[in-house]
Length: 114
Length: 118
Image (cartoon, rainbow over all chains, first blue to last red; front, side):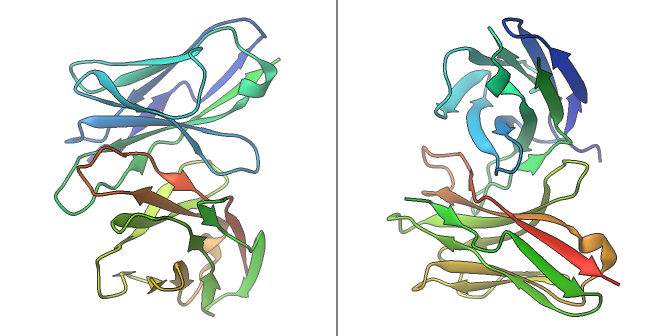
């Protein structure tokens, strides 16, 4: 049973550039969430996609956008990169059940903005 | 106010001993879920255990158990018989509201770095 996969694993960009990160959910999952984890901090929720729509958004600027495809995979796009965007970006997938919705995380993409 | 507070930046434990990692939470919702995740240095967040606010029994998963004290708003993780491979960051997280409601995000604490000594 394949878990959540993310690509690329590492990425180096310069300020002002744009980046696209990719995520494939765990088999059987239809929901994808994205989190940003700065060094030494807990993950912060960016947004969640379900049925190809953004269902909920955290406190992130419009430079952060996303997409979900019919096969449930997802992309996170960040425009006009800032130094402060350097972080580990985690994708999590889930499937809503009656009693709980556990989010399972991928290995993350480490983004460094120079 | 912090939604999730983990007051122990670092903890040390001897191999084969038990350790408790503290987590307190703040919510006005009656329905919520509490989660613990393990993050090794590789970065992946590994789900360990879940406790629902209406669950009367403390959750257990193998060597992991959750000491849930609702009135004190605490959800401490207990790891029994520590192993060297348990060395990692541990995060407590909360999902407020009903499963199937309108809130889906997890709110995380800042984590506790556990080191298991041989």
